[in-house]
Image 1 (cartoon, rainbow, N blue to C red):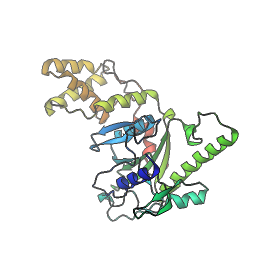
Image 2 (cartoon, rainbow, N blue to C red):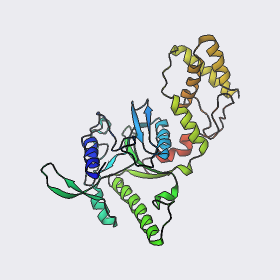
Image 3 (cartoon, one colour):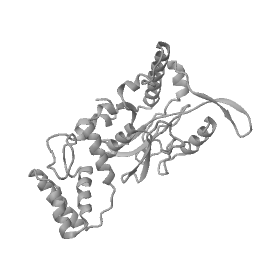
Image 4 (tube, one colour):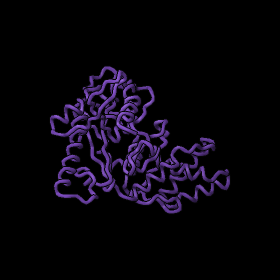
Length: 320
């Protein structure tokens, strides 16, 4: 896909968005659109009622972490960074009615101020004329959170596989000293561009790297998310009774699988009871240590390890 086609596609998806309508990311998690080295996936979220398009393993993990937070209202993945001044991302949201929201400054002006060479392309217009046009950058994950006062706020997560990647692009490739300096300057200025873009509207940017997340946490998030939206056909009262008995077993230090097997033998559909255990953990009805493997055939660790206690600062409107 050439720059003209990509530009037209991004504009068709992003320029007309209004709260209450369908959000379409700039880039979809399909091979013909994502970068060649991407590990794309689509995450079906019960909370948001749609599939989120993520383009890398770090994006997948951090999207799952965001979806776990009970105060999350929405996520806009692969959201365009407008080259020219535009409205605040929350403009028009029903919960911000009567709230004064600052606009975002355009990336073109910010790039000029910080000495970053903005990406441009030759844009062919419908009348056949051509002109140099700034090609829009896009972010990773823009989170919308429910504030303590009931007014939502946004926080921008920019994600990489390693912390070093924020300071040098193509870090694994062999380079001359000149190439290395150019790649370091580009990475740092690109990060500064995005941070300044969102800061102009009072939105905090957080740099997230996968190497800072415990591998056990990653495995647990993957395991829980797979089953979080599985529909259960058993009666609600029966499932509530089952959940209460599971909590008793966990507090007593017994494997929760024993309860699932007992209920499955009596009521059938054992897999649904197993899924209910994971869903209770996902919905924070069953507290466990996320830094310990979550296996139902072993006693759950309940000593600390609450994800929001450890990572809660990443969701805050301003830096703690």
